[in-house]
Image 1 (cartoon, helix red, strand yellow):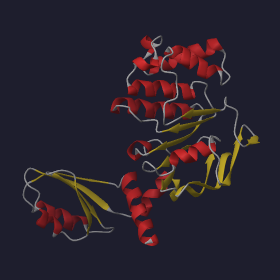
Image 2 (image 1 turned 180 degrees about the vertical axis):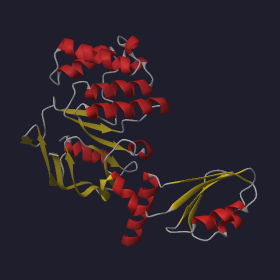
Image 3 (image 1 turned 135 degrees about the horizontal axis):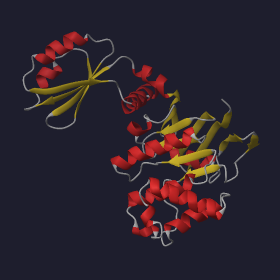
Image 4 (image 1 turned 135 degrees about the vertical axis):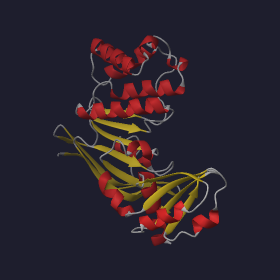
Length: 310
């Protein structure tokens, strides 16, 4: 696939904070590429450098969309969903969407048809003439999303697209992002909601405190975590800590509440032996084993990085 974005050794400081530290990556045409990390990791700073909103102290950004090499593509080719909402709140929704589409190259009638189609998808068509300020925060996020992709950009940058959305709407947004990608839009998204992003992205860049933790295919990252076994255990009575702690091979125990724990075992433990010991512990109401999540892997990689640097 063709490389349409290449970032080389970007650095950005704000006083004593190294927000972006020697970051390099590339995005291929057709990718769903995710920048992941906790709040304050440097994700939004990175996006603003890509869009030339702020300047990097060092490093290069090269775009190559539709065969044109340039520092920043035309606005008709780029869609940007900012973390902070930027639409006019005292203007009717349909007018805002038509205006945003028109400044990105769409004719007025085409923009109106596209806006109404998207408003129908997010179940807000009946509120098209209302002002944005009349909507809930979640519905405002829907409108902000539509405004960023209504013109069918070649490349969409989505910063925290799931912010403020309820679980049902989050599912809809996952479908929308897949739909956009199938229609030819390359997507770069930033989020701290890893459990959602791992259902979308093919490639991920994990960042913490401005530094790269991992850059590569999502499927490959799980091998870093190893063959660890994770078991969720629920109890009908008080958790017998002494009996759980007596089981060999435990790497960590996370107490989720007074009746539930998650136990992570080291790689290559004897599963049959563990299950036999668990069967002898009274008060267990349920047991569920599962693979590590992207969140689990991220925490493990951060811990590994801290141990190396420490």
